[in-house]
Length: 221
Image (tube, rainbow, N blue to C red; front, side, top):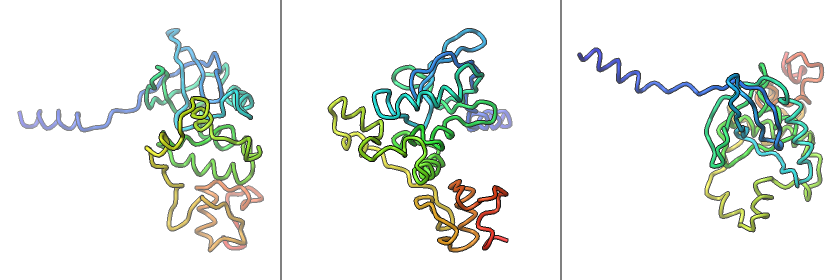
């Protein structure tokens, strides 16, 4: 009896695997929301987790929608479900084959890392690099480049600080004292360990000019 009870307790303690849904994308609402159909013809409204794209009424909003469309429209995708939001949408990490669409949208400057609902901190690293190299929305002027959550708050006439201050902003990932908050050139590296961190974690392409996976070859031989 004790053996059966212990087995039952272990099963309860094990974390449930994330729900996954396979579907084909049939419509794009904006830069972070789309609709898809499952094999059983159920329609799923999807909100990409951890990112926030410019709204259609914002500068770069329509281009962000086009970016998402390019990745997923008409394609079979896998949804790794994280939550359901108050609008009934499935909040998910989206994959097309081996491509992490959420991460790619941030890496290419088509979306921000959504700080208020962020679980994957590597998105902050990708955003830092996109900003450094002025990709996508980061090529806009500072006046045009307003975070979409702030833009929505302004539209509703609500104070941003009252909402955002309730949630701490997770720090940009760091390791061994290194951080992605500053994207460096080889001349600025303290050594090979920092260069490898900048290439592998921060995904800084500047320090691997020949694309062989070895950063700053003068110091990493």
